Amino acid sequence: MTRYYLFMVLFVLFIIEGTTFQIFAPDQYGVEYLFIPRWVFLVIIFAGIFRGRGTGTFYGITFGVMYDVIYTSLLGIYTFGMGLIAYLLSLSIPFFQKNLTVAVLTSILAITVLDYYVYGMMYLLGLTVIDHHEFLTVRFIPSLIMNMIIISIFAYPLRKWFHFLKRRMEEEEKI
Image (cartoon, rainbow, N blue to C red; front, side, top):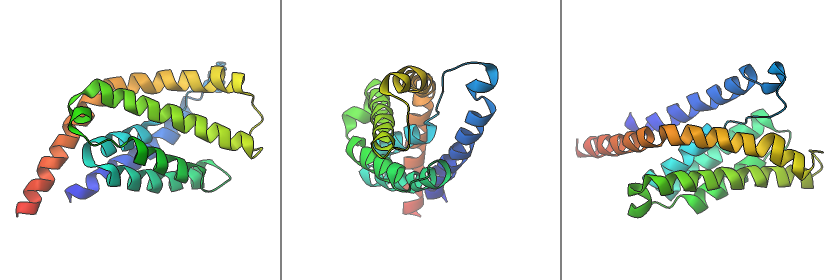
């Protein structure tokens, strides 16, 4: 049962992300900035760091497909981007696991690369008309700041949770 905890948490976060964005959409309150939550991807990067590259890549591709189906009109952009970035940045080495600051910085780098990749692909394919300056000031920087605050708050509990999952899975294997 423990092996399904991560999927369940990611799925709930996926639902909360969409709900949060719709409920607290800045345009409803007269704010021009967009705050795009990337909480699922943050947890996927942490899963890659604490559970291994295969886990990060698997969940990156799985939830990338869900993002593509729900949020975009073109399949494959999030699937490829989240899978590849999770694969490249799932550095499951003891230094990254013990140094929480490096894990947080890695997840922030992952969000930066994902957002620029998605914007670049959408711009290249003509699916967005916003220029880089508008993307940077209205969407990217506010979203990055919000996600940095969220990961800074939840990084320590996430690390503890992944250690707990590891212990539980080891105990279940012994039985």
